[in-house]
Image (cartoon, rainbow, N blue to C red):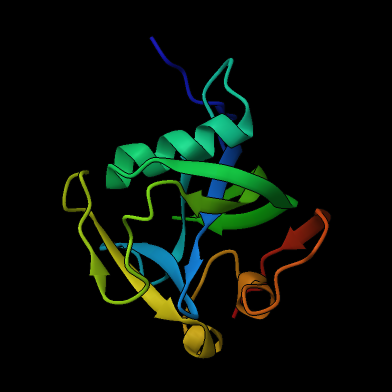
Length: 159
């Protein structure tokens, strides 16, 4: 049995998440839960005994049926935010991913293997600044990926 690295602390949540970025033809692959008003990177919770790179690769395989390889860590993030009224303290690892078999096109909608709760789409990099994205620091960073891993402490801004 697999167990996600998420701890419910009553009023707050502690979470370990991983995510991946694939950029093709000046588009980045994003997804959106149909119940939420924002877009995010493909990823999910890290499982007990799994490293963050393995988790990112597993998430791409589960969600899209596409083998992906975590090429390099872009950001490790201490992320503080509120979701559905609950404060979260999240450790997040964001990787640059490689589409191992080059099966993903860099435009249009992408069909998922998962249930229909998520919508996947290639977003043009020039439109990233206009989108509601979580975590919100990604809007300014996706267009200029770092050449070396960075550690960020991010506290969500409330509007």
